[in-house]
Amino acid sequence: MSTGVPVLEDLLPLDGKRVLVRADLNVPLADGPDGTRVVTDDFRIRASVPTLQWLLDHGAHVTVCTHLGRPKGAPDPRYDLAPVRARLAELVPGVELLDNLRFDPGEEANSEAFVDRLVAGQDAYVDDAFGAAHRSHASIVGPPKRLPSAAGRLLAREVEVLGGLLDHPEHPFVAVVGGAKVADKLGVLRSLAHRVDAVIVGGGMSYTFLAALGHSIGSSLFDASKVAECAELLNGPAEVLLPTDVVALSPDGELNFGGSPAKEASGDTRVVGRDIPDGWEGVDIGPETRARYRERILAAKTVFWNGPMGVFEDPRFTEGTRAVAEAVAECPGFTVVGGGDSAAALDAFGLAGRVDHVSTGGGASLEFLEQGDLPGLAALRAGRQS
Image (cartoon, rainbow, N blue to C red; front, side, top):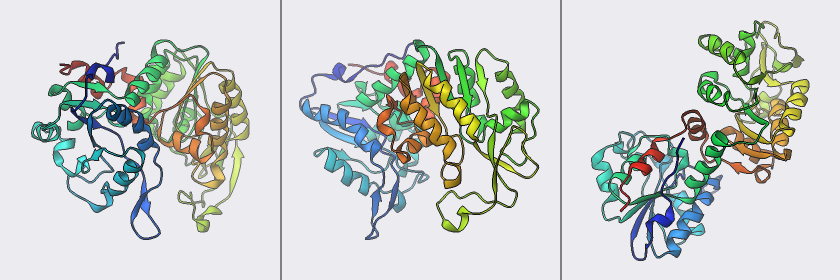
């Protein structure tokens, strides 16, 4: 597998040149005390700083573009970039930030006319948006056909780290995969099964695996169309570890995703084995499973984690995800967290600074590990370099 892409140094000299940077500044916003929208997590903005500062230091005039949310091809005040622009100006004065790319339907449609407008007046292009590199959108795959192009520091680092997991991981290599939808993870699991020593499975997706073993799963999340594929993975080249006990919620219970006190105490919870009573819903891994997963993670030389072990947003069901997050943080091996909810969990538990690499793209990291490439990377390799 070759993921070699041009890097910033390939664009030199840049003094006086105009450079378009595709960043991923798709950050969460909320209403501030005065009613204006504010950035609640600036991780992705801060992650763009090294590339932008390097370009400025080498004399470039920098214009940044990004998407924010899903405005469906038309201006929407909920997705205005004003709060992002303000934070970016604090971190890297002197760069220009264009309007939300997705305010124009040409972005997601990969319109050639939109690409032409985007690159007009620019001398070079830098893709630093790993979180969007799996999308064949205009701002990702279009500019490299028209301008000398390179990967920014963030994108290049993601390729280096994730490519290393595919090409030369140290063993034992353990993949920890959770989340709700088993269908979203089967592709990457099939790919990793030939590279890892063990796959640790948790979250809602684990109940389809348990069903494939013949266990009763009550009212837990279940995808009947994927049972056969789960069974194949259980008989595949890698050891697959599944929960041996789970924390279940009673039939009259209601999950609390938003922290509302009115819902926190809804329903009873109990620890059960692999067979879940009728009507009860498995919502987190149990204490025996936590200890078992922790032991395997701590003994690994390489760990990749993507996806929570339960509904950690509900205070009653945080312990499984917390146990995995703490084990990944304490593991002496090389640790990689694949963005998304896993990165959010690390932040929530105060552990973000204790892993070797936190990816800025959940979906992109999974697709890269599954396919070994992304549309954005292929565009840079095939693009015009002079």
